[in-house]
Length: 256
Image 1 (spheres, rainbow, N blue to C red):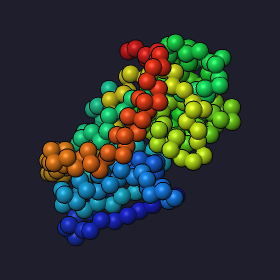
Image 2 (spheres, helix red, strand yellow):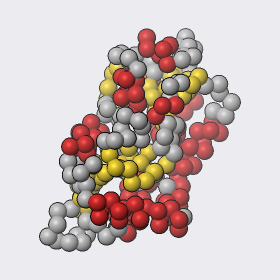
Image 3 (cartoon, rainbow, N blue to C red):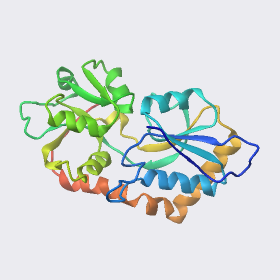
């Protein structure tokens, strides 16, 4: 389902900036608790402070990612920053730091992962064209089961349809906060170092230079005033929760 929200127009004679996001706990508030949606709250504040007119659409990641690569004046978030993407976008600013891991069910002690190579023989659930999907493809992985959300991968692991799935520290803890997921059922087994560089707001390469400058100035202003940390605090706490839950686990590292 496509959800569209329009901001107040700044200049009626100019088309609005297209702002693309994937529907996730980081971009949408939960109906029952009101938690989540921190990324959208910050981005909307940023665009309003920049006095830019925009149209926000929630789309499947693969579609949003392709549109941001091929269109003009498109913003996309939250997008992981990695070497393969560096020249494909203009990077406005980091939303949160992020570390990615491969997870398995805690009960699956038969799955021993000491290196990335060890993971190749297992069925891996990925979110289609997310940075972790691209990262693993680039390293020769083929045994994928792509889906449209991290939640689907968690459910498939519980049903025994996949053995491993990649997810960020904050993303995992956000899902663990749901009433239907028991976080103790899962264990991180491999850190994916090559893509653990943070989630960002980025712009398509052909975007207007004045727009980019306004966004960068407003972003830095929100960081300096403490509003960035305040708005995104709940998500940052999820990362702290992850480190508290698995403080002493010995994790193999995906070395470049």
